[in-house]
Image (tube, rainbow, N blue to C red; front, side, top):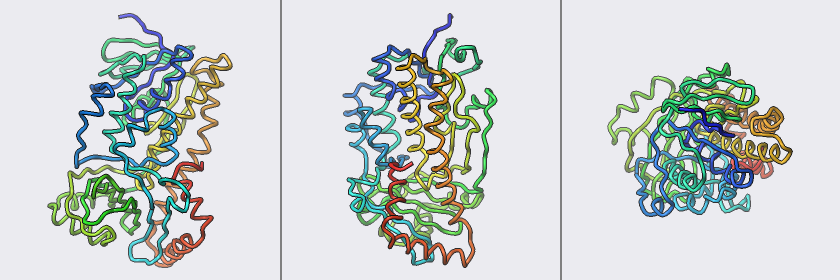
Length: 404
């Protein structure tokens, strides 16, 4: 086979890569950009009508918290009306610490917003984004893996597992944290293990959740409950490394009883639990996210603790900043991947990435220290935060993704 030349090669067709493909639609139309999407898993690209008619939500569904700012980005991409069908609004965020009276509440009403954010099944997001991709002129390389990637004077050459070879002016790594492609290019990552694992499952609760998302901190790690459609909630339950296996081994009744003891009855009784999944947790940050001809997005660039719910929202802002930098470069006669374009992209991302990582990591570490005096101080701080409107609103704006 010969060599195919493209302007942009997106490595990874998951939520981040698919969002980037959708965001590039105006540039594909206006500038005739040639964009390839390389995805290892076999993926269907359903028509919009198939998507609307065939989707059957599952009880056992993994979901993501979508900040209000991310909704605005999805509106700009033209996919929000379909995404909204399966989105559950977060109207209140309740933050507390187990064993302490202090708590704070962030509300959409106080922020004069329809919602602080939304919770949405990952599977539904994927279907909507891929339906939009199916409407675009893209070079789909699926299923295919990047077998080798080599820098060239004007980009990178990618040899694929399906026998194809691509020369790309800009290669975007959106293939998650485990592909190893960035390491092959000499991009190291700083990894700080939290010595924790996240247990994730779908729950049914006995009371209406009323759009409340809970973040509850405990000595052995934080616990979050996110509202889903009906009387369902997504559980993210952090355990010290190694202790999650005992919880995972419990039968459903014993598991629900242990969770009830850990969380209390703010949402009534936990009545049903779906399949449980466990993931080790670390803070991972790539030492480089941009160089001539290369951008790194999503979990390939940064992996955060899930309880703060900032990971995908940070990634989506990275997608939009990359497209903004590309658009500005094209307007000035610069091709995708040129040094000035990538410097513009990195300048747009640096502050946001630094602030979100510091906020998320600091929150976990602050509440992870088990010291009596510090615990009392945290409780007083939560109470004070609930009383101090301006500070609480600043925290809300960060959670909503509208303050960087």
